Image 1: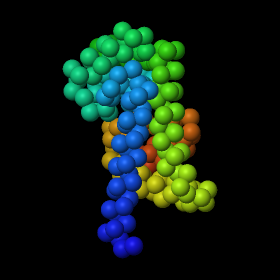
Image 2: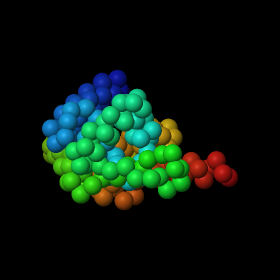
Image 3: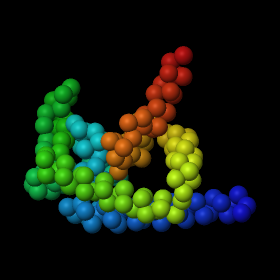
Image 4: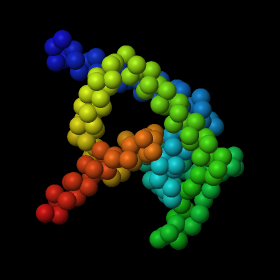
Amino acid sequence: MNLMQARNVFGAVSLALADEILHDTTLHAPEAGPAGSALALIGHRPGLSIRTLAESVALTHAGAVRLVDRLESEGLIERRTHATDGRTRALYLTEAGEKASSSVLQARDSVLERGFAALTKDEQQMLGQLAERMLRAAVRDEDHSVRVCRLCDISSCPDCPVDAELKSRQCASAA
């Protein structure tokens, strides 16, 4: 396989998995669209602001406010006073929201598990290592990292390569 074909095949499998992840997580979310990503992200980053949520799930601020209103009315999230900015509302999952977020993340993992099933355990490890290198190179900044990790399961990634990359860049720029 030449390099152009390798990139093409990788692009196709990436898109196929992304489409399936979005489809399956939406089935487990309270509504279509970015609700599943919003629940997973708030679970990943409790206290998230509506502004950050909007940027991370590609909504306008007004669209994010409407999403938060719907999720709050369904008892999945709650707004609290922000720790450092009295004008900002911090978003937290309720117990029902934690269950919904967990269901979304389980759906995501099921898609990835099916995709990885075509590989041996050694190939899965190798793909994970290669994907980590690609991910570290792809992340642009803190805001971008929140968007990239919006459907991540933080419990399965205690040594987050995105956080590590951002930290190493901060250290390099401080030196």
